[in-house]
Image 1 (cartoon, rainbow, N blue to C red):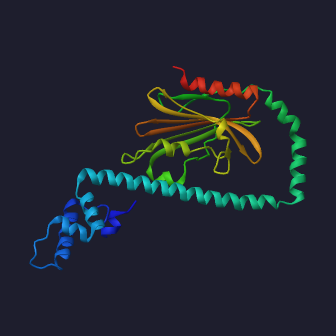
Image 2: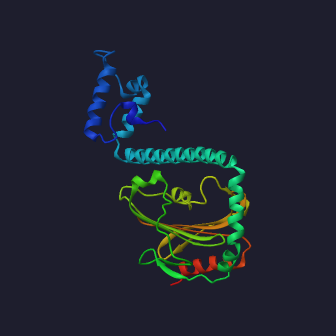
Image 3: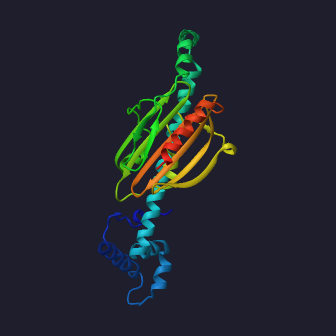
Amino acid sequence: MLNYYELLKISPDSSKEEIEQAFNIFKSELLKFSPGVDLSEEELKKRKPELWEAFDVLLDTEKRKKYDEIIERDRIDELHESQKKIEKEENIKSSKKRKYLGLGVTIIIVVIYFLFQNNSNDNLTEEPKWKTHYITDEIQVVLPAPADTNVNIIPPYLMNYIKSMSCCQSDLKGGFSVTIARFVMDDNFKISEKDISYIVNTEMGSHMTVHKPDSINFAMNIRGFRVFVRKGTYTVEGTLRAFENYSMLKGNTAIKIIVAYVPGDEKQIKYTETVFNSLTCF
């Protein structure tokens, strides 16, 4: 959309009085070419229609408010697209580096895998040590293992609009994980459902391929939070994974809960149900 502030060479913070002053100067400039002639506003408008329209919008309080909201949405979308482009370029570079890893590294990985395979298999047979994690006073969820708080899944383009945030991730060996992010937006900024749905865990970055025919989307309410739920499968580095992605909104507070698991694994499907039931129980 055309930026009226840049077109008129004024600041987005300009007061109505400052814009009115700029408009009067603009009209005076138009009338210089017709001294002594009383031209109508319609005739003046035809001389510089884009500038006239810009003043018309910015001098009207309601029109300006709606216009500013559109400009802000466009700016956030541009930031998001720019971030996606950067991530894509970084993933391409990373993929090229992995492609040229030496045979020696591959041998080391294989040796380590066989050395610890038995121990890993033993650990997978153990039941998780579930623990309640309080996200807010109203929302809690059970986690299958101690939560690692040394994570941050919030996209950089949103950080300037957040007053506070916390992230954590609980992982089990074998591919099951629960990622949680809670953040409070600045009073002057309301995050859209579109933006919050883009937030995923570190594994489900822009390099993943979502199998859209398999995905399911629906909305629900949990303790006053508006919840958008997306379930489906994705492929990361050639491995098929399943996910349940919960985007929760209430006022200025947003919560993300992302469960990732191995599709077809009955235990992990049961664990996923346990997490969901703890989220919705009263």
